[in-house]
Image (cartoon, rainbow, N blue to C red; front, side, top):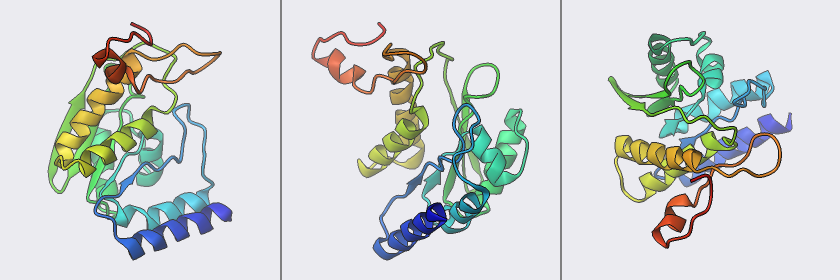
Length: 192
């Protein structure tokens, strides 16, 4: 119940303050497929927050829940993006990192698709990639970039952070958010 109440309060405050950009990372299902929101909270998120979003950035599992569509191909990603778009956000970025082959993200705005391809980086250090991507999109929008360019720059940023990720501890490790900054000042830090 607290998740539902929290989501409703967030929606209320977003409507009250009307920020210029709202980047919604639904955080409904982890990259491993673990459900993070109960069904009632997920339904509340869809009803209350999707219509307020400038862009929503679901991973494949989340896009499947929101669209009620099994996603195993680019065609299904496109269909899900359109279905989610019809629920009210201004744009939908379906992240395709869980599909086989090279990663491909699909952005849908109005009637246009934009595709963001990248090379698959084999690493166990991918903790927080979705949150980082959404935060980078938000930062790029705040800096004045148009949506497509904001997403492109965010994709480049997270790809670099994954490529030069950090081997810390056991299990899934973190990406290297500061790799480019360290590189610019001549410090080597991360998997080079």
